[in-house]
Amino acid sequence: MNANKRNLMIGFAVLFTLLVLGLFASGGSHIVIDGEEIGDVGGIAGILIAAVVAFVAIVLALSVTGLVLVGVALMLVVVLAMVLGSFALAALPLLFPFLIIYAIYCLFRTKPRAA
Image (tube, rainbow, N blue to C red):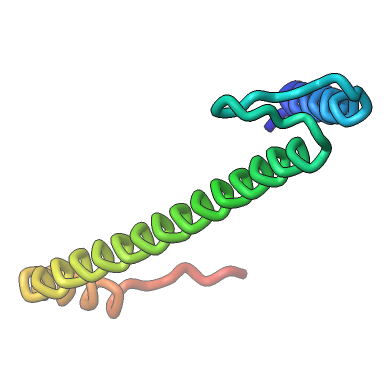
């Protein structure tokens, strides 16, 4: 998150906090839910507590989902490594002639000596 978006989110948080404080400070405000008027501090606090609980639940659900996806990704990486390793072992007999030629080359080559 860059500084511009962060400042925007901080501004929204401050604005929301000021609106909630204004809602608590004013006596004439009310909210109607299913035909029932919620006007006291307890009703508004209940709505805010429910919003906080919903936010925490969403964050935890997304965290668990992220951990599950990380576990699946790691498992797929291990499976891919096993498949590539089995292909390498299967191709090893085909590489023996080239490995023997390379070993003979390495055995008989001369290294220049530094003075």
